[in-house]
Length: 180
Image (cartoon, rainbow, N blue to C red):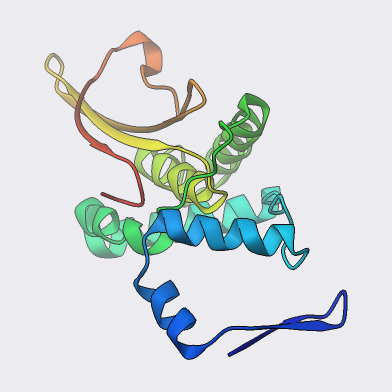
């Protein structure tokens, strides 16, 4: 296998054994390979931020997935959409806050999503994990009046709010590390 670095007009070779090892390796080993590619100048150090338009597309897609497969079915697919690799540096609060504002504004403006906490939480979880940031998806309940709520936490922030309208929810399910 050959990896081409078109910026510097050079090629980096990988043997078939290296490719097989990469395919069978853990997320930590994937991170080491990405670090080496960054050092060699073949990959950008920071991935590009998601545009607000991209957030809206993800939000609507996740909402349709939840409608088609159910919330449990969507949770089972998280490991495919949200990789297990986590960057070493902590999630910047500004980046998480920007994503929170984008998700909530798109959710409120969309007649399809219309402020659905499940869609907002899963979208935020997937986008944060795809950026390599630590995120945890929570599903909680409260007894009286009975209600369920979903939210994602990262950098001390919750998307959407963990206690909407002042009602506290007890987490009954927490998912991190690529849907595990």
